[in-house]
Length: 234
Image 1: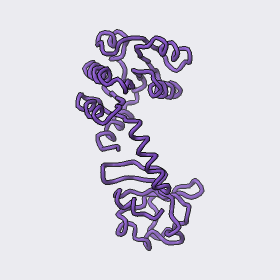
Image 2: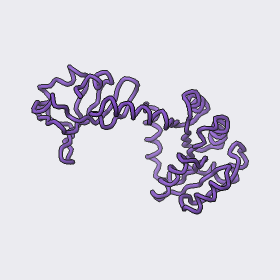
Image 3: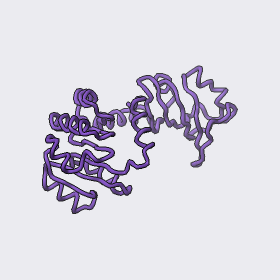
Image 4: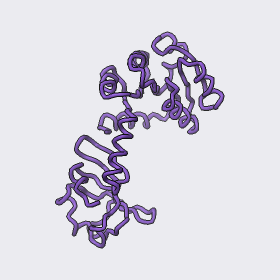
């Protein structure tokens, strides 16, 4: 779930045009994927891990600008490696809870403005937030949620939760709505949702007129309650 504090975090991240330097601590599959993507996008990436083989591998694969083997629970080692000078640090240790928490605390106390940490459980996630992580990701949990939603609500292509009760979602227009207008369907009254945009043949009609006709198979972007979304025909 993404809440408003998370939205504020990403807004601050985007608003800083100088925010081009990243450090990734922990080079497992998740950390490597983050580092590789950032590097491909042209950002400077400093990679950190306690495993010398992982450090050597990212250098060999050229997915890091710099890489160092060190113990991230030691603040001095992080400082000497230049971690505290980065704009954003991603702590991808995850499965090692104690090391993850200590590293997150070290990085925040070192003055890094944006700290993203990976959690391996809900308790881990709460602890990371308590000690100051600006954004916490829980990939396994989020992937599980997404899979369950795709299996039970295949007409919902994607969703962005604003809070526990309200969501923006991409929804395939069901057969029951075919040939009817937005006004005729009374979506706000019946389902508590509003149509923000319609997409057909890869073209978007933003803020469509209430007299716009819907066609089965079209995609509509809606905002509304989770309860209302779950009541839409499949």
